[in-house]
Length: 276
Image (cartoon, rainbow, N blue to C red; front, side, top):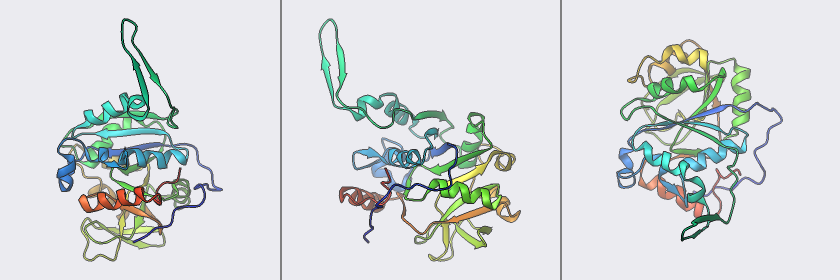
């Protein structure tokens, strides 16, 4: 399947103040074992950069540049990457001798990013990971997504929709094939949240979520809490979970074939999620 790239920047007439972005980076990535034996799935490359970098670039182009990474499995790999970011992303000259010097020959566009990396436990579930990073979030609203999926969703339009709905949380509804949790939608709200699908035709939670701290915090009850089970189900049953319908590009990287698809799109120069 071919996708046309965007021809303009994803600007929106409805401005929103920058929000903190929580990204789940701690899973084992068992379906990508060939790639994740030595690194966490968010560090699996698309082109010459980790998929995590692509996700962060997309948020940054919408003005959201403060990131909180929920680390777990091989989290030290992510820490090392950002600790040595200039080294990892630049052409360099090293002068040896008694007065050694490292010269970086190029700059990058991530100078104003803030990246907070929190060890949320290797076996902690998504709700537990979110609970552990809430102390790093001062504002009522914040953004949440997964470290293995890219999209061209307009993040600021998503935030505006969340506020219009008056929801406690809003997720982005997309329509790929099966394997994921189904959403039953009615008038922009989620009337039922099911963890497993019955067929491959329903909308699913594509991540790219907006949450209110006061709404989600009481529902996160420990490290074994799975965000996609009791918390989101409670919000949907109480009419507090909205769904922003996204008809554009969305693709996760859950197995080798999906990794190949993303790399093929990037190599073609027509990656639909490249909004920067």
